[in-house]
Amino acid sequence: MEFSGNVVIRAPRAAVWAFVTDPNQVGSCGPGVESIEVIDATHFRARAKVGVGFITSKFAVDLEMAEQIAPDKAVIKARGQAPGSAVDGSGQMLLSGPPEGPTVMDWSASVQISGTLATVGARLIEGTANKLIGQSFECIRAKLEG
Figure 1: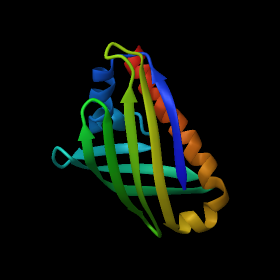
Figure 2: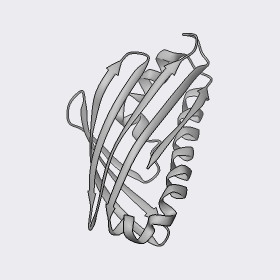
Figure 3: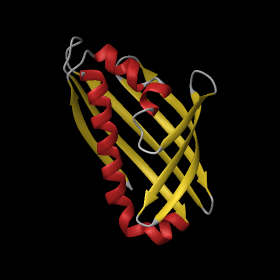
Figure 4: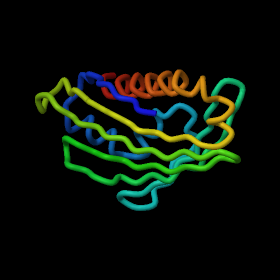
């Protein structure tokens, strides 16, 4: 599945960059994220509970900040497991706009889900993913603009 979009955040680009590249801060805006463990400067692990329709799974996800060009571009890779399901994905964000803001974030993500969650919840996954993405960006905006 492919997702993309953009969001305008009324905050300086440096503040947006600092927030979205800090696993603990951005993790606090991930719906269902139960914990974030920082391994090192570019690797971290998240535990999240995700529901698709009537199926709820707890995922352990290993994440890698694969590329960072401050304060303009970041690429992240993710691989996760839940009982009977797996997820692999990557995401990219590009920040633009004047240094003092507002900041425009163009983003894209590619996600592959396999196993029980993909089989049983296939028709519901895209709608659920779009809802969760929207919630994440609203949280980021609220924290940075507030």
